[in-house]
Image 1 (cartoon, rainbow, N blue to C red):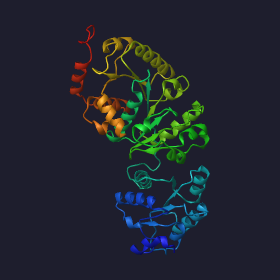
Image 2: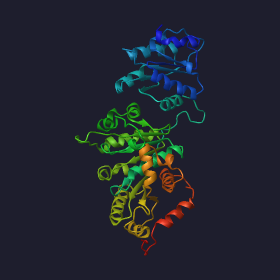
Image 3: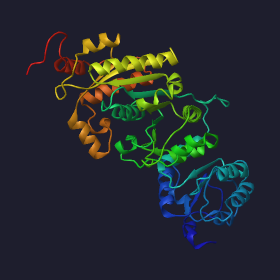
Image 4: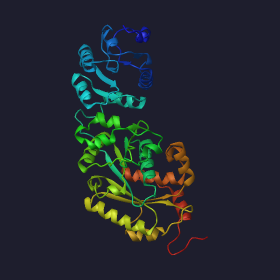
Length: 416
């Protein structure tokens, strides 16, 4: 038996535990121990080693319900997993780990008996989700239809109005306050800020997924996303500026289909330049939030984009939003003029709050965590509820009072 498995001395040397894991490195072992503790499993069931060390253990009276195998030490990982799968039997769910991000390997491991394969480095949050996916539940039907998450697109009708800030923070609020399994998709593959805003390194598979949609599956998607928390995953990129980045409608449709099957809500930060090319995405969305400032150009472009969205699919909920409104930023037109211009009511008014927005940006955190009670967060919270389809968003009179003190009345100027 390998010397790396000295921890085996602390537990009975058989395969009869409910949970058993082997990790090839200490960093992976630590994440496995953290995830195991949350499930009530002993951290001593996480061992250092590889499949060969597990093979040397004698069989106990039962078999582990979950066996986690780190395959990094194996030259022939598929053969090693196949041998162990035959040894423990069909009653054991095997979760494989490894550094190779290879769809062909993934499919071979699944065929050999693995229930899933996760690309390292892994986090405790990701492992907890993987553990829970295999746990039986009496509440779910045995042949439930795939989940169909809601797509909530956010488009800035003018540059610099804060659409990306709104997309990032509403996604965070959906995950952390509405308890929805949420994905944040940033379609600006070269200048996107969603991951940066949350102090995350963007994944490296989004462009690959869009360039080769025929290879897109749950493994490639999972390896491309980064997790901000258990309920919020971010999919973005920082592609080189000297390269021409392009993806077609079919590629994006394939990606959205995969995301809708795995998440309750998908918030899409969509650059306005992509709207003419990717109207199909907007047609399939449940809501499209159009973010503008209170300006004449904002009125014009809100109307144009709203017509484009409704022309693609009349059933989409269009949510016009005025952002960066308040004493710190004097509007060109007042609210009443803007609403007359777009022939509809604003779904939300997001106040200018340079102090809290700057603090959140400097800390790499959301406004919901840095300034939970601030009016700007209250506005975003109400918008997140509308985007996600909450039945009765709560009334917040204090925020209404704030707006009344900051917006000019129709026909009256602001005092100097």
